Image 1 (spheres, rainbow, N blue to C red):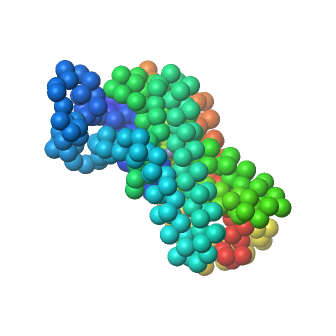
Image 2 (cartoon, rainbow, N blue to C red):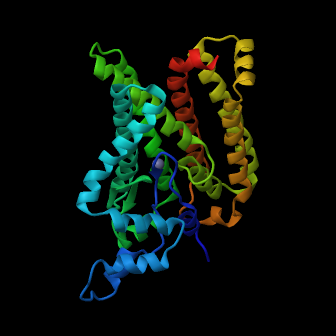
Length: 333
Ligand SMILES: [Zn+2]
């Protein structure tokens, strides 16, 4: 019978911006097979060759990439490559080398510490993990081997939910640091603070959308899997209501707008409607996809635990939007 963790494993994909979390990877990853099979006199990386033949897509691709890029040289140079790549992207809009580089540095820091957030929960749960740079995909926090990976599959979903929330929590905390740095009278540092604020907002808001294989998408998968069938619909309604309230409240409090201004801004900037729609659709999709049998699992969360995670997620959504919308107000309205 397929367990939730197996289905998580098949669903995990890298997120845009590099936030990916293959916490429950398929066991036939090359490294694991190498450990099980007696070592043969190896020409140039036999594990890799086998991997190329056998693992063409999806989650396996991340393990293939880890295998390919786990060398020390690649791990050291990847963050630098990202720095250059992002700086080039930022330059297209800023046309200022210094500012582009500062923003790029902030993004690399946000990406790396996001993954360290995941790794922190792995550590707390007694699973040995490592953060890998995977150029040009992003970075991932993953158990270091087959045994640790199997251990992570058995974690209570309460812990797995914290694992999924930890990355964005770090981003939002760093956004707070960025806000504080912005006021520092050192020009470069203030610019870096601004960078932390924007790039953190980018990573946080995208990963807070409860869709696809983003952190929050998997989070709501775990939440609805834990809940009993009769609670699912109610929780989905309350959650979408609270999310809409959080998004509106973030705009309202950040911009000191009146209701009509807010309404006009929403209508003229449909992008924010799309965010709201994605959030709502994501929650309902997760709810609809839920397998009622999962609630009987020993790993399932209790109802109060699920509520705590929902409230934590919505608080992060509010904070990330609130911190980003304030400075963006002139552009939005
Ligand atoms: Zn993440």
